[in-house]
Image (cartoon, rainbow, N blue to C red; front, top):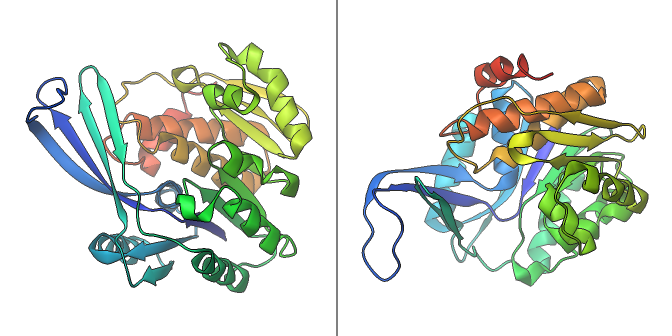
Length: 304
């Protein structure tokens, strides 16, 4: 079983503007839609689309939380949600036009360490040896940069594989617990070490540093140029991305994580896992919504 944890889920509002965004005036939308989001929920959605048995775990609040719960109830065989009495689950806003995308992320409800403890208890009661857990996305500042470290510490005796996809210290603090996979992009990889990386060749030594710090497998996204993977077998893998038109970048990285976990959990084949990750990430990037199985397998044929 694969579980995903989304501490800070969201309702994502996407607007296609008629003209470039101008501050200080009313901007008109030509088209808008909303999606249920949060990195862990995105991972769970793509896994679910691939037919994987997946259980999303999340924290919800207010009217936006009820909307997310409706989505989970409709789309998943099972889920676990901790519902808060105060506040509301955050909104995110993504404004798009022909020049690019501009995003605004809301804060979400106030979370306390006691709430995190309740989530950890859910995971400890639910998860069994051999399960996978994907912990991804941001956490409110009230939980601090050791929140994911605390989760991994609590689960270290459960013998489960944990994937981490998070920003800088939130992720770096978990490496001593040997996450099964982490997924920085090239820019983030450089930020971890205070350097600017301009090519995959420049990034390779830092992937090895990350592995020395404890990460078992590291996927480094290269955007439209594909991705590279340093496997726990010590080998490097590279793959180009399939060609296509970028439609929506939201959720593409989460889809890459989902694809890697989907294949890795089955075969432990690093090459296949990298290809599936790239196929999932690309399929979501080329779509208005997260990738379907049909889109993923069509692109998978193109990846060499």
